[in-house]
Length: 74
Image (spheres, rainbow, N blue to C red):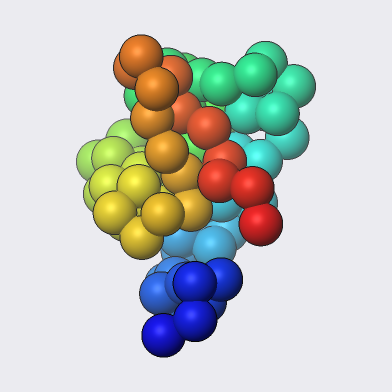
């Protein structure tokens, strides 16, 4: 698989990434708790938000440094 191909996201995870992109960029990273709050403010249940963050992290769309989440550059 070429290096720049990524694993496909679920539609909900795609929406979550779109919701997180601006707040993460604006603040130069968000804690997991802050990211969960942003998603919850966007209408996503807190438990679902945690699952979506796990999906985004495990598939490489988000990464964590010192407990801060960042959007992986494309």
